[in-house]
Length: 467
Image (cartoon, rainbow, N blue to C red; front, side, top):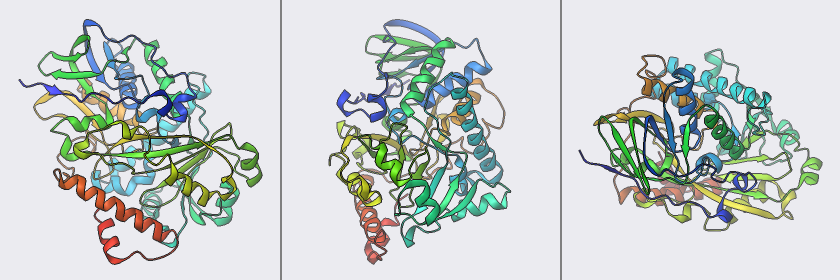
């Protein structure tokens, strides 16, 4: 039986790590795997998905021997580089309904609201200090083209009797955020922000306290499938009955998954502390804010007064080969700085101290998929979180635990399980060339629409080709 080759990781240098990671004691604390070892379930990837999966399995089957192999340190990937926004799947309920039907969509959305409550319990109990602030999530429009981007989700929620969102106007948004850039939108009240690296470190500590083995700085280089599967690393071999692949964008290296997965980068900056300015303009709480551009802007104020400001879809990987350019934006954050100063002209004198990037695993439906490899029923995977995972990966952990433990329940049978219903993406080089052309068109479209100008017909057509 042929082996599965994994690509070598491209870890970020310390100076290229996110603000979150640099301000948190997140370095590896566990020893790399050496020699031979055995376990029942091996998990490749020590981010949110891998950690939540391990914890869910332990909740249901405490005697299960679980080992996590992490290429760098837990949270060093997308889990420690994101924008720290916490909101439910109700914002994507229209996408979920189209893919899995109304019943499963409602179940999954409610599960993410439960996950947000679970995060609150973890913080309130002192189990994990993650700077969770449930001050709301604002989804806004700053141009006529963005108006009503939320209408489908909003209307479905109302039809289903879920009052998750309420409308806000320009005065509301200005009072909450201190910015006049957006003038209409909706807010999800039971949502907000978190320090994502603190959450990852806390989950790692919680997993270790439950007896879950973690080996950091242990990239898996090859998987030898079989009834007893072997995971080979630089200095060791781990034998196991079942495998969970939870390595986000790095799963694009697996030929079976590559047609369904594309990799882009999200680019983020963090300013110097500017609490006095933010207090003066009225931006005082921990709400998370997004606009409704195709390449969405997302931002928050930290408890210490920095502004975290990000934008989706930066670099694109040819054949999904991830290199060091995915760890830091090539323009030193200039595109984000331009947009920051448009949204907050009051911050033009405030220095930007950090800029970083990170690869994101995306599917055409913009929703994750869970399954096992076609010829290997004991090798499972979770992928395609599309940059939205803080409230979603606790649910992913439940789905993966049910699959691993062989349970026949609402999680293992939910519509996110099974890759056959997903859209295949074009092969290379068409995928890469097409993505570059479409990305440029989307940027031109965004830049025109933010000025309430109509993009030309060719730009509109090319932008419409995005998954």
